[in-house]
Amino acid sequence: MTLPEEEVAEELTPGVPGRGPRRAPSRGRVVVRRFLGSRQGAAGLAVLVVMFLLAFAGPLLSPWSYTDRDFTAFLQPPSADHWFGTLQTGADVYAVTLRGMQKSLIVGLLAALVSTALAALVGAFAGYFPGWADRTLTWVTDLLLVLPAFLILAIMSPVFGEGTWALFVLMLALFLWMVTSKIVRSMTVSLKRREFIQAARFMGVRPVTIIFRHVLPNLSSLLIVDATLNVSAAILTETSLSYFGFGIQPPDVSFGTLIADGSKTAVYAPWTFWFVAGLLVVTVLAVNLVGDALRDAFDPTSTRPR
Amino acid sequence: MAGFLARRLLNYVVLVAVAASLAYMLAATALDPRSNYADRTPKPPPAVIDAQLTALNLNDQVPLLERYAVWAGGVLHGDLGKSVTGSPVNDDIARRAGVTFRLVLLGMIVGSVGGVLLGALAAVRQYGWFDRVSTGLSFAVLAVPVVVLANMLILFATWVNDRLGTQVFLVSGEYTGGLDTGFWGSAVDRIQHLVLPTVSLSLALVAVFSRYQRNMMLDVLGADFVRTARAKGLSRRAALTRHALRTALVPVMTYFAFTFGALLTGATFTEKIFGWHGLGEQLINSIFTNDVNTVAAIALLAAVAVLCASLASDLLHAALDPRVRAG
Image 1 (tube, each protein chain N blue to C red):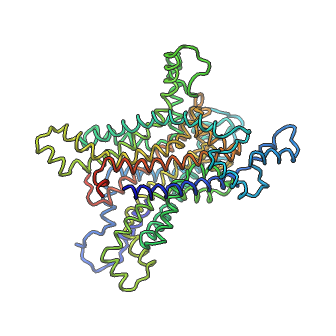
Image 2 (tube, rainbow over the protein chains, first blue to last red; image 1 turned 90 degrees about the vertical axis):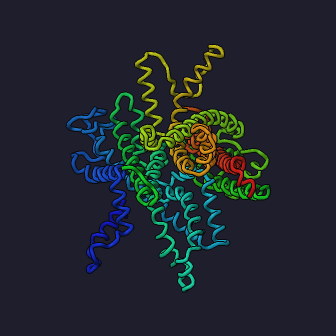
Image 3 (cartoon, rainbow over the protein chains, first blue to last red; image 1 turned 120 degrees about the vertical axis):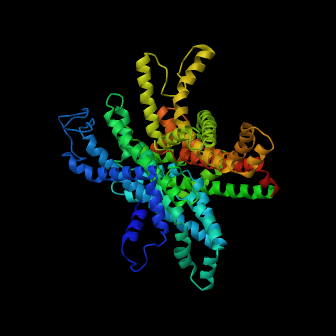
């Protein structure tokens, strides 16, 4: 979502004066217009912005922080004092939920970025360099597909102690990139036969430079869409792992740990479960809508009646 | 074709061997069976712990490669080793594989058939009300993780049970133990247990399959051969089912095989939450009890399942698509 905004910013900066007003619209501008023109894209983006604001600015509105305990209110329903109610420990559900949301959003975004970057690099290098490089990279990709990701992450979980969530993000990303990398590889193979790549090769441009300057930019639409959809995949995986205690470790909280705790008390204290679950579902839904709308916006052949 | 399949098979076998070995090494390094003895009262003397761990091939003072060699030698003879309690892993896994298989098979059938039907119907009337509703619903379902969905189902079931005053949905286990109501009684009991886990497994599958099938179907609907089928006088229904649907099913079949392979361990969350004693539940339990051999055995099974799935998808592809057989 940040890339189209950057493109807009680039479009708006008065960098090229002197050109006539009848300039052909650039691809970036077309994509942004198509994206914002679609109802689901605009709605998804708006919801996501609200979610980010809520996660990072919302805690300032409440007097409670996520470490506070209110010893006068255990497991109380929502009230003026505690907007989302309190947990069994007396913790404020609003504060705890937003804290968990911060963590889940950051983990999801970073894991998606890392995994898409990994997919792009491995796929492009495997596609561009046939022979042993291709065979090795493809084999590693296949191996990671065969390894059950959940199992490896769960076994590694004792390593994710307090403050090592960056490592958790890396491990999460390590199991998200394989399928995209296969697509990138096959697209690189066909791109390599195109004239502009051939021209660059015969002019003596180094292969690595060709990959970064010519191959990857031509796959940018695929990669942007993939990164977006990976955000939701990463958030969902993080939730599932943390639910069973294999992900984010206490005292840190995330959507997964909150849902695990909330589901135990959900029958008689619904506020401990439904606020977290609802926010999670809305966030993931918004990310998926943005990803879908981006895919349509990048695809020149798609026609959606809007 | 046979040579191609043989090469594929060889490659897969090597992959599975490497994957299982990696999983064993990881489990053996990261998990610590010795800590299981720390909380016992009275605490057994270190020499006894060592002897027990060595007997189970779990002693962390034996070099990793030596333990690996013992484990791999056993696996080659069909022996998956012993669990931390000393019982053979083979028996346990065999029993649990049956439980998982029953759960996954039903969920998979309901999910794929439902998804394919929904997707095909949605594609035939693109942008009609049915298409819009099913698209919206599948987006909503895909945003709900299994852990949330399963808990929502349990809450819903408790609510319904309270309202009706009888136990309509049973939310824990595969069947009620010690039930003596004859064949039909126990069949009903099993179905009551089966409904919710199956729904939680298959809802997401329905959503994925319907999206996939819809896109495939839309690609095919505009194709020349469908128009030809109509032009030679077939009714719209016959052209759609006999020509369009069948062609659009080919890629979905591949996806089906892969999902089935992945689900054999992917049902972990459903099993754990609904208390089914299957492979997935055992996976989580064995990590918590530092049960290295069981973890490795399940990793091996998962890898083998993915292998079988990709082989099956190759074969299915060849069976459904004449071009693959000719080439």
